[in-house]
Amino acid sequence: MPGSDVLLEVTDLKKHFPIRAGVLKKTVAHVKAVDGVSFSIRGGETLGLVGESGCGKTTVGRMIMGAYRPTSGSIWFQPPNGEPRVDLASIKPRDMKPLRRHIQMVFQDPFASLNPRMTVREILAEPLVVNRVARGRELEGRVRELIELVGLRIQHLNRYPHAFSGGQRQRISIARALALYPKLLVADEPTSALDVSVQAQIVNLALEIQDQLGLAYLFISHDLGLIRHFSQRLVLMYVGRVVEYAPASPLFSRPRHPYTEALMSNVPTTRPELVGRKIILKGEPADPINPPPGCPFHPRCLYAEEICSRVAPPLEEVEPGHLAACHFKHALNLTGCDALGCAI
Image (cartoon, rainbow, N blue to C red; front, side):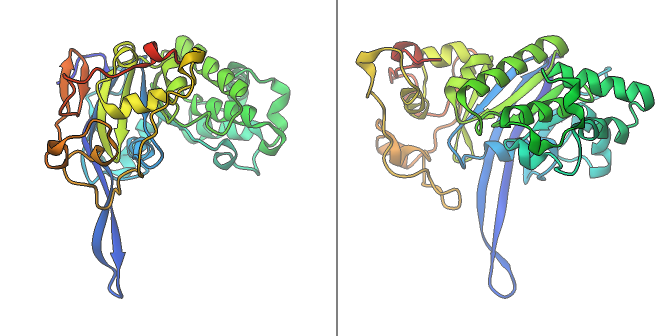
């Protein structure tokens, strides 16, 4: 059983999408988008979920939100006010509605996630009206409070989404997600489509809101530099599986999986003598339909040996709170961001 401060606990979560072929549309194979992922998030904490495109991190976020039904596994969520824990993986859709107040999501593309026919006032008021939280003057007051919370002006409420920049649209998306004051915010690559300066503004805004409201974040990204800025713990995924799971400080100081080292080597450095010291992984990411035997990373790994192609390494603890799925996690002396002088 988790501690009393655990808000969300994901255990052995899997999502296998069927591939159908032929006239009868028989299932001939499965895309193993998520294949046994486990982690937990405490109240008020930020957990970073990192990996290359296609590793399954967005699928994890959508299963937590109920957009995808897991193939197997559990997603235990602790509602506020001392209510009993709920398994979001097995709950009926009609029973999910009351819980949506406590779990919200910010999507990668703010323009696609905002209704172009609604003004900002209508966008922010909609969740309050649908959940019967406020109406009349109270509704207008809440909407104004939300728009100011994300650093926009009240005059913006009468405009439509197309009248704003990408960073402003993402602020509106964040304001909408905060309308019901949730306990957990799932942020799926919220800054990937923005300029670097705007990314910094959005991240700083997220930190300020977390301090004010006590939010917990599941921050999904491929950018280790961004993730380190405000995550307390990190989960690194490769082809649907967790390869490393650790607190931020020891992870960036000494990674225990070669995939983590490769990602860190590609973060820009502040030390000129280390420019060009990137680890270029050979080949392409493993096929989630037919992953290689043994360790799925072994065809691209610089340290792979014969056992890696035969036996899949378990995710085991290297030191307290630090887990890695590598046969040589104790023997390898991998280089982390601290030694590389990463500009983060």
